[in-house]
Length: 504
Ligand code: GBH
Image (cartoon, rainbow, N blue to C red):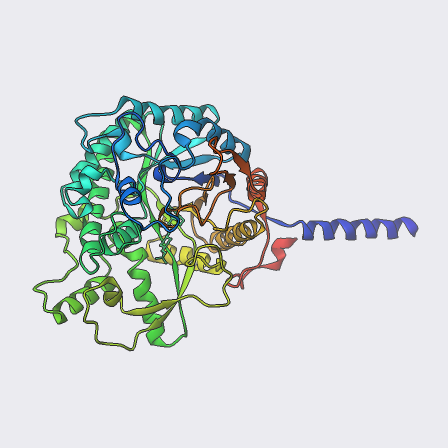
């Protein structure tokens, strides 16, 4: 009798333990990484024969960076890359996603002169990573265009597609024996919309209504050209994979009125759809929502044709399907309302889109005004991609949270715990997701926000000439997630179909 009671008590305790310690497993072969970008971490802005890029130019010659800082030294990864690799080993990540500084490799912007020191630097990183058993994943372009090419019009110049292909050819030849996953562009929407349409990124041209569409048009052609270049000339021998990584925020309709639902659909097509539809959809080309709206406004404004350039039928075919997986950077969610207004007089992206976008006051905030913690939006974004683009393999190449730099960063841990669960909700519903990446490995130069909004798993002491790196609490947290290949279960709002029997 006694032994029976003891037996049941033991069972009860162990069951409780199982339930409270319950962790959700990631799919087999799922991989984890951390990401950075050249301008944000390297420093060495004028090392050896490197020439100026548009971020050197912007930070040195304008007042646009809030704390008047720059990336001249940044994290000094130009010299400290071995410590970076050591940190990646401490975390136990499967891969490291970093980007190449174009003007470090090709000081004139063109491929007639290749910098030995530029190649040497990236060869050293790649070799150190491989020795440490960390897979390199390379972004060819993360926003730091050589100034010499900006002087020729930057991405609004259609010939940039050729120059970008020349640059890509150089890096495939130099690194492709060891790099097997390539991203042509990081978040083209962001640098086209904010850099050419607005002033939120270099080159800060503020040409909204035309500039963002022209630059995006070249970028899409440049991406396709480089995909085909890799596919035809390098893939047979190098056997790697290539795509781009697009930014995708979720747009939640404010109410379920048909007008708000339509507004949310339009907002998503002006976001993910702008680059997603031409590449990942069955039909190719820009989404109808963009073509129709921009055409209509352009006509109303007296333009002779749409401010959105048109692709020829051959171009649509040439761009369509130029991916081996879909790279997604996701951070946050917006609410969307239909805009009652009809008088869209100004030629602008805002007026072309014509919806009201905002964030709910109840959504928890971060150090970045735009970044609210809305994990269920991630699930919906992933499900949207699954149903709109025929369930492609999705690799999440950025997800992260900003604060003021504390080392006991519980809010960051909470963010990643919630977003990892949101991602697993999407996996449970049939999304084919194979990778997750934390932005960022370490605190770094957050573009126009300087060093005021920090995303790192490692703290970097920017007052210390040694740029000492220290793991934050979130680094230990992420290390454990990777080691366990599992995360504590948290129920998100969009998790209604979660089956309690999974607990047992
Ligand atoms: C990523 O972009 C970048 O790839 C990375 O370099 C960067 O450090 C990281 O995020 C953190 O920001 O118009 O001021 O309201 C993130 C996507 C989309 C975030 C546009 C900022 C606009 C902010 N970005 N968004 S604002």
